[in-house]
Length: 336
Image (cartoon, rainbow, N blue to C red; front, side):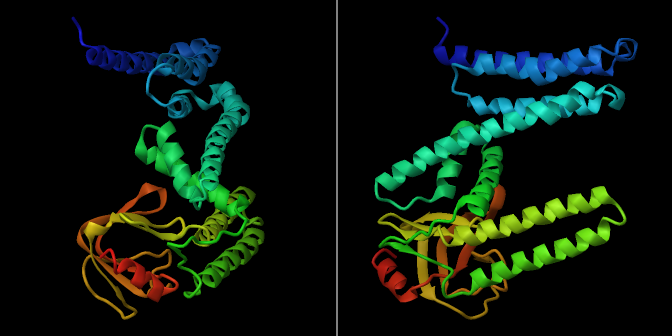
């Protein structure tokens, strides 16, 4: 009798084998001489890459534990392959797909993730707990996107949009929560950075547009998005709090640094504002060297800080800014 787990592994293997077969056959046709003798073949190849492959994959994973949103990377892979194997003169159907269908797919994904985030956030608020929306976004993306690296990138982009454009309601810290921006002046610093980026962008845009309009608009878009990212971080700082629970310490620095440790991993926490030159010491900050700190946390073993887009940074000690430092030290002294 064949064990159920063996059947499951075989089926998963079959899914990827079928997908690989469709993509490989499309590549074979795209690189063959038939494409030049039969120009209409390009429509069929692009249809296989952007419709057949994602749909077959979606049908095959529908009743499995593979997240449905994993079809999005499959679609992206199909578009990427089509862009490289189809000659530019035959890419009209692919251009149409990119211009009209792909934006609808992206909006649908944003809508699905956004709806789940709203429901999860509402549940947290009903339970009378502070809603760490970025944390909720990361949880929901991890549930829907199997690859943790991809899910973290997607979560960061979602958080940038949420905090940069929609998060305007004030948030108040709970009893065991602490802010990290009121006494450091970092909010004014970040607003100044946003203003400088916008002013420089406008000036540079009018200068470049005389030389190359396309380059001018690309740089304008990148600069504008950079300003939104900094603004999103500044607003996240005011809405994501350092939390002290019975079992854990949750350290948060807007969108640029998260660290959750159990109390038995913490060696000491002390008031600290001096310069320090010591290996393995990191600062939980976006603009290191410009932002202040008032605590030094030492760990018994190396810990990992989660940075933007899921990037990691290891450290043995961490410099942190915490408002109401004395109350924080009194609270954590019972646990360290």
